[in-house]
Image (tube, rainbow over all chains, first blue to last red; front, side, top):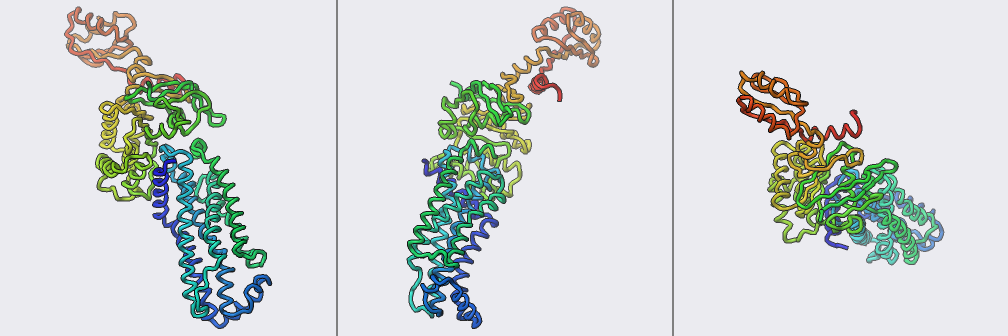
Length: 268
Length: 313
């Protein structure tokens, strides 16, 4: 593999993404919302609004027993721990998933729609180099945003919760596993899903609509955790992450078989 | 050894036959034109030669290599300017060239100089840092050509290269093609509908119709093969017009008419008989000022071939 060719394609793709307002808007808004706005609001809300405290207490009482028992009595500190380690945690996985998904849609279906794929096919890049470059162009930013966002999230949570917690309580072990193991897996899933969809459709719009369906596992995880069906601890995070890696691996293996110049050119 | 060699190549898209038993060879340093209507198989041929399509049967060799199994090596030495330049609107001109220079493995130390030289050569130096989205079609076409030349390819494919170019830019492109071929020994394959351009630039042309090779040869050869008989204008002393016409009319198979006083037009004459006609006029005491043959053009040959193949449509 020629790493120089791969780097050139990755750089080009990322530059193209950076300059698209339509692509950058969701790539900025979602992480800001999930990693800055949500932790701030959900930490402050019970303390700032009297009525909110009771509402959150009610919400806490309605949590499934296994979740509730894990945290004990409802206090402000309990609430902060529940929100950040249980309720918002799986939502963080949306960020790497969406970033990879959106960039991959632009890199595969978008490039075909703009008719800029053909010149790439005429370059000396092999099918494998093209494939790897397109994957990395979507996966690397997804991981960087996930890691960077997680760091920002941790700082915000600890700072905003300091008056209640009086210590650095975040991230916990589950969160660390989630960010380092599950987030890359979900990015790979978003990427692989979009790759397979993009190989079949002609336009970016179609690709994003169909590729978005791969978000369902994340939604299932969020719902499962809130409903008490899934209790996300460090080991569970390892297991789920491994499972998602395996699905993504299978999808990528199918994708790499179909990602051939001779196939792609037929869809130009 | 030919740069390109196609041997009995067949390609199909589903049930549709795109190329039927196509065999041709392109020699180093020549400008070779692929002519044909839309759907004749020109783009399919270029894609097969570059390893983007796998033919159903037949053998393809480019620089002696198989584009399917050694595609990267082949494409490193080729470049293709597609019909529409297909540039990314969100990149600047310089970024576009730099990205492709890296993809074609141009030495890092050479990239800036090469990019600057190409922007200068194609009149884009002042717009080098502007995004391509703001460029006119002509500018995009020039940038597309610059991109194709960024790694100094040995074999260049130009698909309708002058579409959208103004006369100045067209002239510049023609000069570039001539320089590449005549001075630098590069091979150029031109896919075009522009028959005048093909005649002016090409050493040889292949006429494709419905995926079949209809004719192959130099433009002049094709024209002569299709229209072996000429029309000739003969200028004589105006007072001798009728007498000159009578003298020639006696020769077998010639159709003689008076174009105007002093100019006779002779149709259906073979090239080999032109000296006889001149000798007869001189021997008859005519004052012969000029004999101008009207050579059949590549355009005449092209339409004769296409209509002969498929009938007038």
